[in-house]
Length: 191
Image 1 (cartoon, rainbow, N blue to C red):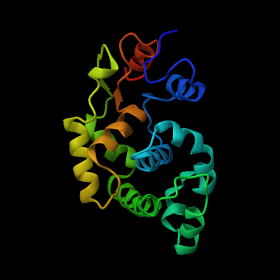
Image 2 (image 1 turned 120 degrees about the vertical axis):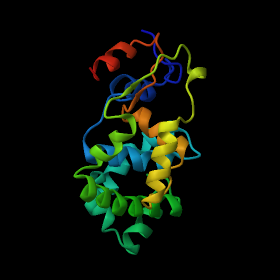
Image 3 (image 1 turned 135 degrees about the horizontal axis):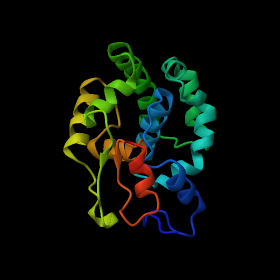
Image 4 (image 1 turned 180 degrees about the horizontal axis):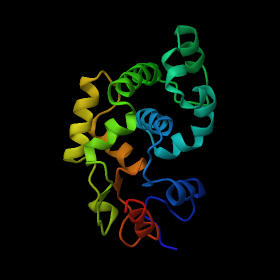
């Protein structure tokens, strides 16, 4: 079974994520919030680090309920910063709380975060046809526009590269290489 090169045979965690989640279109607001927070937490680290900590993140971040995260006060933030089960970076933890407030504002304005975020790709996943992972860009015009608009709305840790990784994870783009066994399956999910 051929996979994208970033999910090597000897890494079950990457393989499971690649085979079951990566590139699958996400329309659930709470899961979109989770991916947004985790992609920001990943900045400067490996995605494997975040995958290993993901279950614990869900536990201590109230299953990524944006209403609950937006209500975090200094005591909760300090407790999170002492928790070795997450990335203990004050800027990233504070950004999660800030982003929860911004997320709720977007939901109020657009009816859902889904309706807002999917507009950057015209409501349909972009179907790329990369032959190799070296062809996959770090950012695109769409991730640039998303980043700019999220920043304008007050979101943190949403640079264009983070936004593109978010788009890949949440299936706004299909970046499985054409030789990957998931390419056609994921492509079919958008038709």
